[in-house]
Image (cartoon, rainbow, N blue to C red; front, side, top):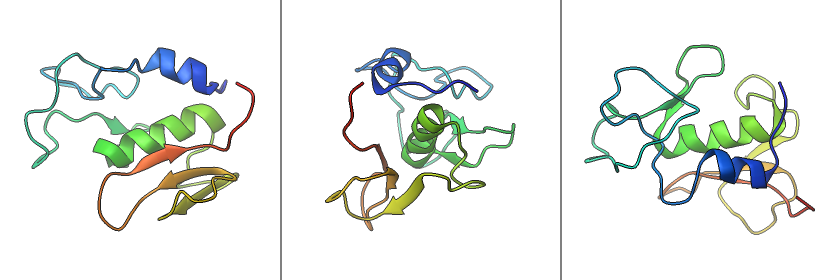
Length: 114
């Protein structure tokens, strides 16, 4: 698998778009729509992170893991090579999934030339 720079990841998932499948019936982890989810009380219209065909996570955690996977080539649930999970963004010194005790999960990578 080829990996993406942050700039390429931003091209793949443009600002102002939504990582969901809207009215599509199948998961499209590489797609996005122009329609926001109507609710976060269920995952009916959410895309899911599914590197092997089985959805491992959805919504913000799924998107964070998908972005990390696309930049490193590693599934954080199977191979933690270069990955860590943290509740703080104070020192982003490796590829991380930021998962605060309350709030949305985020993907972060250390500053570098991109």
